[in-house]
Length: 405
Ligand SMILES: C[S@@+](CC[C@H](N)C(=O)[O-])C[C@H]1O[C@@H](n2cnc3c(N)ncnc32)[C@H](O)[C@@H]1O
Image (cartoon, rainbow, N blue to C red):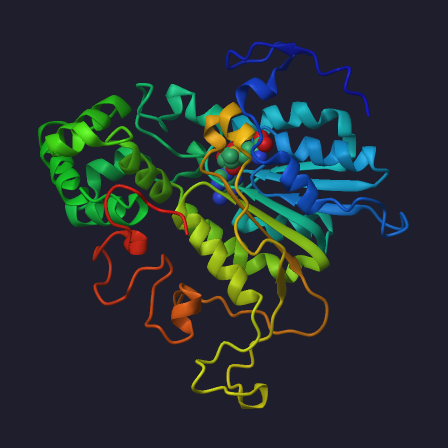
């Protein structure tokens, strides 16, 4: 592998021919050592009979992907990787970074939920490992023209793939009924002031359309009660921006579909690693892993013994991490964006098993594993079902903190 070609230059949005940007200064891969330990075997257990195959569903700038291929090489393992990203700009930078690996790295611009089509196209049946490093990259956050951040003024866009034809954040805030806006901000942002913010957006857009990140941030800030504004730990617009980004890119829907589809494409012993950055994502992963790692899911009063099991559910995953891993203190100090990261890893188990039929409804039932076992029902975001959409903050966490569990 030739890494001498990796000359560095400051990234100014473009790359001079032959020059490579300093990728690490644009985006630092999060929990890299933990991801490598989770996905890469120490040595060649296959006897070099076939290459190990990996999927990186959130390629970004290929920080994890390049390290995975590099480490595999250093350990004498043959490895191939398919990298997906919705974002064409990230994809073309990643392609440059992965050039030294030649045909071992295959890239495709695609949503990660659609990974089966990309695998089929390559003729890859089963994977030895899959990674999701959810959310947006620093490249996206720090590019004002992408409209992800209230820290930079820019058009209110937030689409990871602006060519997809999906609605931008600006179209959403200017067109959605006020009740829908409130629901989005409440559910995806876990924002206690969702109602006030939705009404403030409605008043503002009646005067003129909201077109920029700075305009929206100012509207949200003004909508916050002064006492809350004074005591808030983060900018009042933080949760609203997160909510709109999740809605615009259907991030939780993508995650749900990916989880539903990935298990059958993992080889027995193959690993799945997911890094989440907020509690909504982490809760979804946690509940999915726990359900897939469980045998019978009948409520205890129905199935006292295995013979009495009516659901027929069998485990398909083994939990490698019982609790989510957090970044080390040193990493959190070095890279502020790593602070909220949580890594969960599971391994596909061999043998006959039934895969969880992950219809939206089963997900709802599995929404809280403990609840499915008899403590009342919860929806996919862990909320009690009684109140329905908009009935409360996701996870039921009080006050300003989303709260990891
Ligand atoms: C946190 S970054 C990944 C950074 C990468 N691991 C690295 O080390 O450079 C997340 C990336 O995933 C992409 N992404 C997010 N959701 C996606 C989806 N549903 N399908 C495909 N790509 C997605 C984003 O465009 C972004 O580039």
